[in-house]
Amino acid sequence: MERRRSRSCPRSSPAWRNLQPSVKAGLLAKLREYKSDLNNVKSELKRISAPNARQATREELLEAGMADTLAVSTDQRGRLMMTTERLNQSTDRIKESRRTMLETEELGVSILQDLHQQRQSLLHAHTTLHGVDDNIGKSKKILAAMSKRMDRNKWIIGGIITALVLAILIILYFKLAH
Figure (cartoon, rainbow, N blue to C red):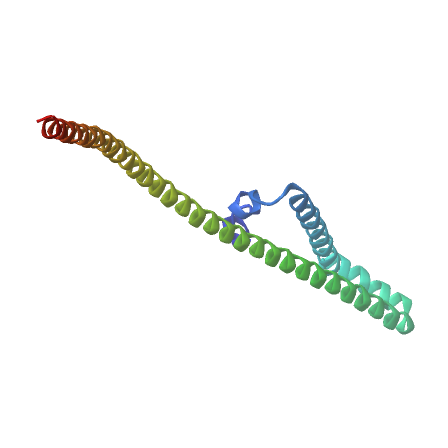
């Protein structure tokens, strides 16, 4: 009885809150069924083990005679076996539900770990892209400066070539004219 009070309600556990509503509804229905079966078994056990019930059963057996004794005993044994079987089935269903819950919780933890790793990868890619973007901006500035220098150098070389051609033409003119 003390153990039951110290346990927390299954609905307050993180795994219970993360279940889909349809799965949760099914599990709640099974849990209610198990509780009902357990209460039926308890009441049956109390009824059978109560002192007045024993006395009444004993008197019935003595009045009915020895022939009825075997039938009553067999009937009680059959009811007890049936009750025990139902209790075992309920226990098995509870164990199966618990196993399913634990598997679901493990799956949820695994999914959360995968999501965390993917988030870390995305953050790393984001940082890398910002670095690449900065480098592209610097490269663009350098290429623009190089393009300006090339244009300036073209004009300077063009001016030098023009000056040389003019100088050659002037020299030729003076040599041919004199």
